[in-house]
Image 1 (cartoon, rainbow, N blue to C red):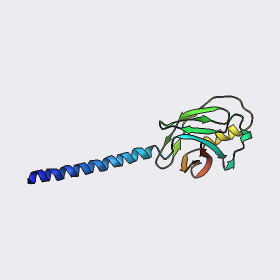
Image 2 (image 1 turned 60 degrees about the vertical axis):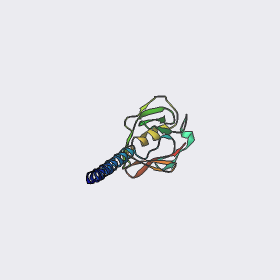
Image 3 (image 1 turned 90 degrees about the vertical axis):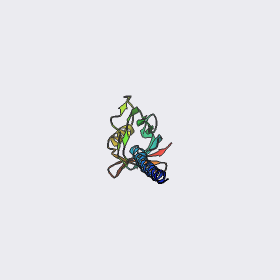
Image 4 (image 1 turned 180 degrees about the horizontal axis):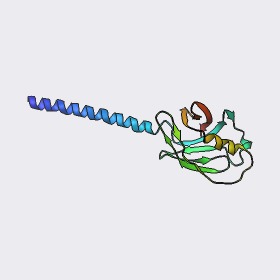
Length: 144
């Protein structure tokens, strides 16, 4: 009788330890993908200035992030694609983004591309995505 009680206590203790370790591991993997939720984001500001639609010949710049760490979108003229990584501390690495190379009028695309190359961190506030260089806002987006 005493042996079965001791065995039961040991089993419960081991189960509790295993559950705690699994919960910690789950938290880490969830945080490793960051708080950046998948979906399409449309640019609203570049370097703190509201965008002017006429500066972009095709479309407003936008980015779509996927759960498998792919990013694609449009720079206002050309299509973009690549991969990204995030950390729980809010850093983001967009890596090298491939782009089509159509010639387009206006300078909006150049401003967008220059800004996106500065991005090191991100914040999500509701339906607003803020891409930062350190603590400086570089680009803001609204969820589509």
